[in-house]
Image (tube, rainbow, N blue to C red; front, side, top):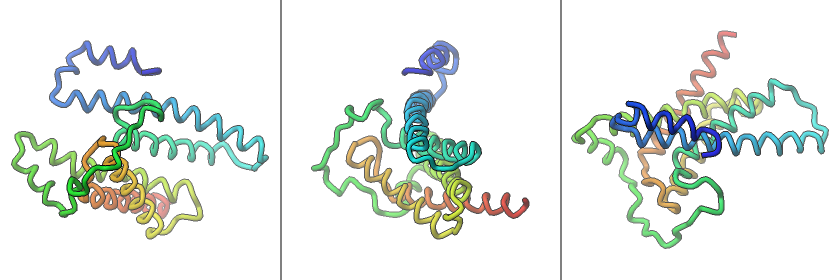
Length: 201
């Protein structure tokens, strides 16, 4: 880790390392560390592009864009690029059988009811919804041209499908139709929250 190594080491030496789902804590810290690096790179490239094109903008607009891009980077770091830090570490598996993809809606999720811990069930459903709520909120928040529900749903669907496809090719997760369903629901909830707050202004 380039930025959060000391913080992670502190967590690792405290009682927090003994929690049942500490690997998830490690994944979050590792993903945040990667997000900081690539967000700094994005900010530098964005500033350079604005200088070259002399495009007029505002600090508020750029701040919104930076927050949303940072969220997307964190989302992909958590779900797809879990075990790699740099692009050249990626290894694609093009010959994987399609049979490993779960295309039966909710079947695997409902099986989690009988797991030893209900954490996996809640994370599979509510976790996938929660992770995509910022996307549904952020699209109309960042772009004035994309403030319709249909556009948000399509963007959320394409983002979720991209994640599942990359998880399949990189073997960094399980490609599951349930994830797509819950992700789209999360995007709709996030959009609804945006409309609620926007209506109150």
